[in-house]
Image 1 (cartoon, rainbow, N blue to C red):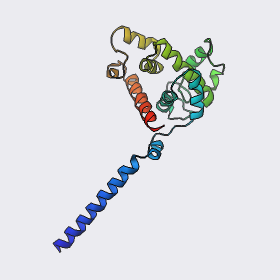
Image 2 (image 1 turned 180 degrees about the vertical axis):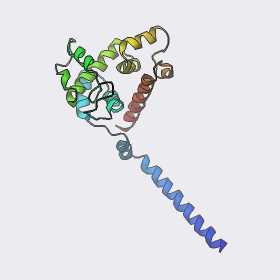
Image 3 (image 1 turned 90 degrees about the vertical axis):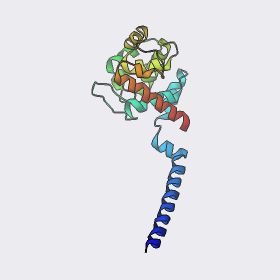
Image 4 (image 1 turned 30 degrees about the vertical axis):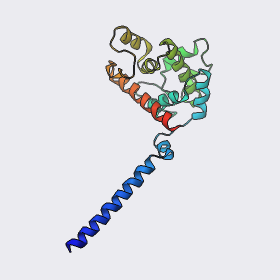
Length: 188
C-alpha cells in the first residue's frame, strides 16, 4: 500500500511541476503581459504625445495610474477624466499660449482630457528642464510644491531618490507611474 501511495504522490508532484512550468511559460508571453497591463486609447495618446515629442508610453502610464483608463472618473478631490485634471488647472491651461483650444468643462471626453493633460505634462517637463520625474511629481503635487522640495534639498528630483518625496501620495504616484512606464516599454 505504501508503495502505491508513494507512486501516486510522485506522479502528482511531476504533474504539478509540469503545470508550474507551463504557467510560467505562458506568463512570459506578450499576450499575457498585454492582458495584465492593457493600453487603451493608444492612438489618441500617441497623437497627443507626438505634438510635444513626448513618449506616448509615459503619457499612457500617467493615464493608467491616474484613472485606470476610466474616462468618466472623478476623484474625491474633484479631478476629472482620463488624466485626472482639476477643473481650475484645466481653466488655467486653456489660457496659456499654445495650449489646446478645448473646453475645460468637457474633461470627461477622452480626447479633451488627453489634449489638456498631455499639454500640461509637456509644460511641466519644460518647467523642470527636461526632468520627467520631477514633472510627474508636479503633475500630482503641483509645480510650486515640487520646486520648493527641490530648492530646500528635501528631494533631489530623481527616481532613485523618490523615497524622499515628502508627500506619500506623490511619492507613490511617481513610483507607480515609472513602474507602469517600464512595463509598457517592455510590452509595447
